[in-house]
Image (cartoon, rainbow, N blue to C red; front, side, top):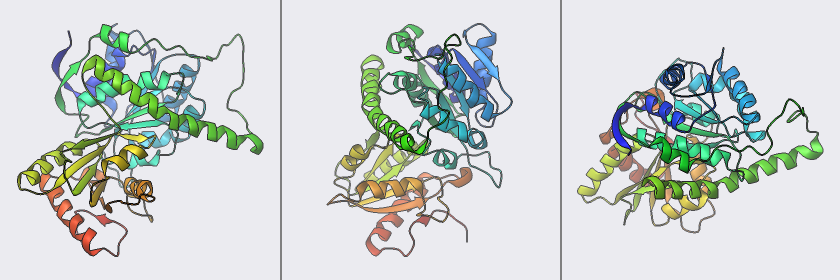
Length: 391
């Protein structure tokens, strides 16, 4: 029977990969991801996980090793963060285009310069268009559950795409939380063995992904897009089955105390739990404020978002990344685009905050809501607001 145990979240993510019975782990250390692959190294060394553990010389090499492993039919896992994700950037596009269901935990950390080891979402936003399925989690239990789900989703023959699980660096990755680790037998029933449809075979060598002239490239990319869009139904199906099996429910856009709320706050990642406490306080004070949490980043959940905000008058979006020279935050920009054709839509106010790991407290969320309401009523000359900056 599954037990609740106190675990560092990074260790729990490694345990989730073990429960998924991975065949290959490509590992390169980078703060704040290192504890994940360190723990997997211990599991392999102790004989608790039968897997090929490949210590490589860079993150570029890590993802390249994942390509080869997945291409021959191995269940493959890696983890990275920040500059490491950027170093493997070019290889990410190969993984998705070759339809290789690699699972990667991305422990979100700000991009330099200046060097910062603390969390924001600039690394996630830099790989937004890489063709991977991408999800954000807010606590350790969600990280464990969705790493397991990621293998089932990515390896489904209707999908065959790589999956990133984004979890905030330090504020989540290094925190010890009570986590329910499922039994190995339960996971084995939920997650069938990987059965690749076209594994590479050295006895029958072929070339894949090498060259596409203009007359075929567009069709290849459109097929890739259609597959990623279609993956959403498989994701929903997986989450429903996970809920039936383990009793924990997930959805692309999750609502918290939104009943009758005219003002909605929107967050991603671990700060959502702080925002929930702020919403509780404002609700207790009689304010009509609710929270929506964006879990599924790619494929983007257009229908679910529109449904979640249909009755709101103001939507305040917090971005933890800055689109330099653009409309402010990447998430807010996409939210506005998603709502553009709606006959009735809330006034959308974008805030960029928490950059480089700067804390956003419960009081900060209250201030953000109050400022957002005023800006929605009076308007602003700026495309977005930077929150908490010292002038």
